[in-house]
Length: 601
Ligand SMILES: Cc1cc2nc3c(=O)[nH]c(=O)nc-3n(C[C@H](O)[C@H](O)[C@H](O)COP(=O)(O)OP(=O)(O)OC[C@H]3O[C@@H](n4cnc5c(N)ncnc54)[C@H](O)[C@@H]3O)c2cc1C
Image (cartoon, rainbow, N blue to C red; front, side, top):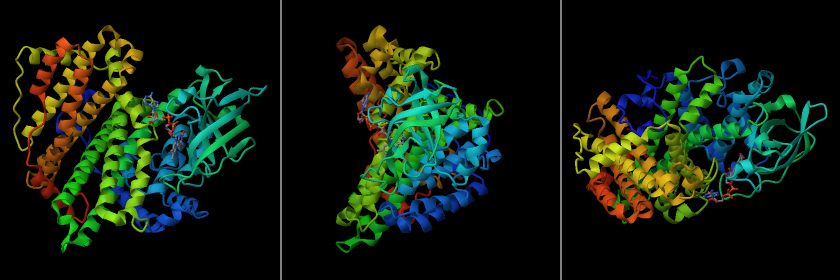
């Protein structure tokens, strides 16, 4: 991977106009990383896909056997440092591999929960002796890990947990009592990070590593699920379950910090995995669409089917551009902090990019849902049967909008964090808002002209950002002095949701534009033809969402006197442009069909 010229700050894309050099692309990956990706692909193709039905039917011992095989092949150790028996890959490289690993449906869920939320709390927060004892076995899949935060009464509101930890008289251990709900790998896990409150006190929310089996630990029967049926999801019961004090992660009261920081990384990985899943689904849909003939024509040749293929391809392209951009920004920032805090530096970086991680989680899980839905449609009646894989893709995808923080909660995280960072002085939105408002209201707004094949796109991204500034100003104006009061801001969920949608679409538009510009710069305009078409296609949907979200916020919250002027200003900043979408549809679909359903940009 090439060295970055500069490290980027989280959320800065809303106020800066960065050059293409700041994004990393998969072309920069080393041969070693590509070889590792091939190994994962081969494992999924040879071992997972042919046994998908048996996996989903929970064939006795199968998932654990596959998990151990993956461990022996070294597929579970990318992020674990060499000193603990792992590979210690560069962050960007490890994130790239997630796309292949996470795409394996139920197996992907089990293995990603193990390497991510299961293992990382130990890697980041355990005492050295515990790391030395557990990490080598977790790296090789000898042991499996799980993460137990959710409780029956504490889902989205995870910090309201009731699970309690009482110290033993000698202070050398804690007795855990309570219930955890929906725990991935629950039936199989040897090591579980469990969150509980010491003596039930809110400010003593703490993470404990429970090594199973042990007294006072009980696994409830498997949940019967809509999708990812081959993964284990169980409730866990704790009754005076004794855990050594040495198994506390961080210190007493660090549980909230650990839970939320681990989820940041989980959200980025979920987004990357969703892109991988969408690629598999599109390939399957296109292959079927070329084989299935109706009216003596392969159905993939019909305009309305091509439209679906173009939608899938543009969503996947945006997903690739966005996730690799976020992974690259994090990777650069981690490298810049090298030698300053090890694992903790990584967590600090992930906190900096908390908004971008939440964007990936929402945007890619919703993109995946559109792709799998249209995959079923392309398969027609056969898509509704269990004989074909489309229905499984459809069912398996649905969970991505629910776990790792629901998409509603993540929308609130995006907008809430922005306003919090503005209040903390971490995001200088104020001056750019004033500048945009001054230019727009004073009738002095001049749209800058940009050159090149993406000149118009650059202008549209420029406008979209100013549109967000205008909308933020409308929100601030409507909220008055309450804008610095987090509770009051959180009371405006609908507006926060619309603003989160704007932020996501701006990031998506800009990420595709920067990646495609880089492609033009390195390979020339001709080679970048598909990338340009995908960028323009994607911008159509994104621009419409941005415009309507801005109008919704302004008409909802700005005072009526100001709303008229603000709406007029929004019109002047509207990033949407009419396009011949039919020709773009056909150009993209033909290109994807020519590469057998793979996106080769
Ligand atoms: C298959 C599966 C695997 C899972 N794996 C794990 C795991 O390994 N470890 C773990 O700890 N947990 C796990 N979970 C739990 C998962 O993270 C939770 O289900 C999720 O966080 C939502 O909590 P909940 O189900 O209690 O829903 P609730 O919190 O009750 O939410 C219900 C609905 O209300 C909405 N809502 C809630 N609060 C608000 C609000 N303030 N504003 C607006 N809308 C709101 C939600 O978005 C959602 O749409 C798993 C769940 C499933 C189904």
